[in-house]
Amino acid sequence: MKSKSFYVKLLIVSGLMTTIISCNNKPKSSDTAEVNQYAKDSIIDKNEGVKLSPKGGVPGWGTTIKPEMQVVIDKLISLGGKPIETLSAKEARMQPTPTDAAMAVMKENNMPMPTALCDTVGKDIPVTGGKTHIRIYTPQAGTAPHPVIVYYHGGGYVIADINVYGGSTQGLCEQTGAIVVSVEYPKGPEHKFPAAHNVAFDAYKWVLKNAASFKGDASKIAIVGESAGGNLAANVSIMARDKKLQMPLYQVLVYPVASNDMTNESYTKYAAAKPLNKAMMGWFVKNYLVSTDQSADPRISIVNANLAGLPKTLIIGAEIDPLQTEGKWLSDKLKAANVDTEYKLYEGVTHEFFGMATVVPQAKDAQALASKNIKSAFGM
Image (cartoon, rainbow, N blue to C red; front, side, top):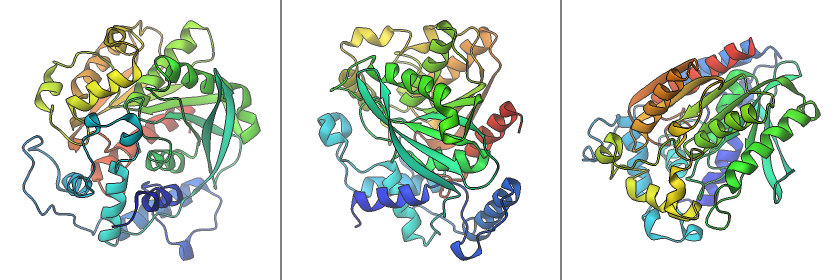
């Protein structure tokens, strides 16, 4: 078995995005549409003919799981990780990730490694309490200045990083033709609530002020977040509104943390799901919050926040996910606050599916939907 670092390195280079092209046949045209169409055609030719079939039986916690999704989850189980909720935060950060599993599935099935159509550069920026790291994805095609997407990764405010979520950021950059700024943030238990929330907003403010320095257009900014990052993204919009700062033109919240109710329908039905379960969510709460009482704070339970005046929103949900119900609740609350909101639930997939577009068809569709909506908001 290859080490975790091997797959992380592959992710940084290739990014599990939907655009798979041959290095030798990469188009030289600078026209974004032509490049993206070439990449799309290459995916159809190279990957959609690969049939992924699970070897084991359907899991009891997810009887509707799609075969491609099950293959990834079965691989994750085979990598031998220990239950996150039984570990220290330091130990948990060393466990195999769903990204490791998806990369291993690609390798085992001879699925071509994507050649990135966006260049990346890392940078440390000043934030509350010191500095944080960002990774800037810039399209190789198109004409600057580019619109900008500020992206926040998942991990329960405790684990994971911008490397683990590289599939999402590469995919969004390549499909929208926008610059993506992926934001790292402090994690618990070393940095308790609201450290991640404050740094997420600091990074957004930095992008507003400094977009021109990396060929970005500060007048066209959207935000995207997954899981805990979806919560952070929504909070950035709320803070921008409250502080009368420039608002994002659009926000995409992918299976966001949105409520502190762990007794709802999806928490009950998918309590033992993988890769996210109810016990893990309790562990995240314990590690990030000073006390469990803080889970009622509207910055965590954003279904109880003032949502009026927020930007047009897309919420993407996964069926086999403890967070499914609260994502729908948030959609309903946004609509009740007169926020133009679209909700899309993808059936047969689990939490963390969004970045797996080269393996899981529903992820390809979800990235395409998010990209289409963002481009529309940018007037592209």
